[in-house]
Image (cartoon, rainbow, N blue to C red; front, side, top):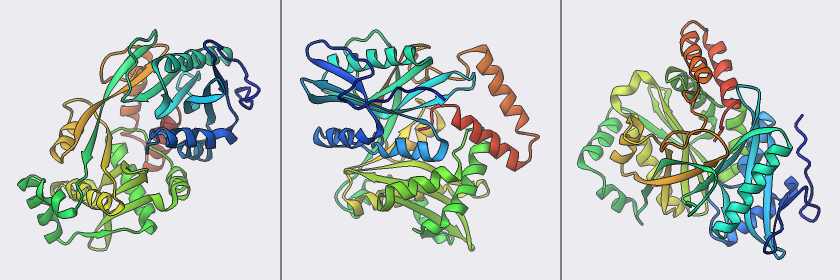
Length: 366
């Protein structure tokens, strides 16, 4: 096991003391301090809520990481993340999305330096730290820019309906007339998960375990919602929604490929918008997408507004819209991807499922 040398803030494992700024490696009991800092600063989001670290730990036994920066004893920056064993068996430290938050460029830089030092001391090969929409004015670390999208939620369902394109409104009405029914029942989670697995394997995308989904719903409680579509007594599509502090995020959605012609995602997004209105949320976050790719174009077509998200790392390429650990960034990674894409054609479903869960555990999980 990796020795994380976890201590309380009063007993730092190591730190940088300049201008009264001290960064420490904290025990998990201090995730409450991180939550309170984020909430007080108005920077708590559906992405960086410390609950995600606990969900990953319970699902995969990842190593929890919490760092706190103090300025003369007052919290001025935080980092929440986790450590995984990569495909090359080396350790990698990831923050949550928007998992690095601080009061200033100086403190962001101090925390990144601390993370880099921490990795060197604990034989961790690399780190990937997300600062969300905040871009440091100057940094010695390589930066990657990704596109994220979100939908602005108006005050009423009628207002939201009116701003939809006429083509989209027609498509939603058509789906409902074809006998698809909307359900909001967590008991449909297993049916949704099967659709999710089949969809992701078909797209050759790694997947989360069912235990991860169960844990996510348990930890978020009433702030987690599952919306599904039923046709002829069968669940054929669904979307997961998480509500935190005035925003809703849909981390997962999937539909049965046999119903592709109905464009069920349009109805799922519309039901998500209605849920946002119900919760009084200002934004529906749709996650990241490759610029001008198919997913990106769909999200824009349903009202998604693009914005930049920034990641900092101590190694790898920093090309826009490409993760530093993109599987094609090295010959070994490229060959591994080709092997995966070809072998899955010959594996039975249960083995493909196990393979894609294994791959998810070895990469950035959120």
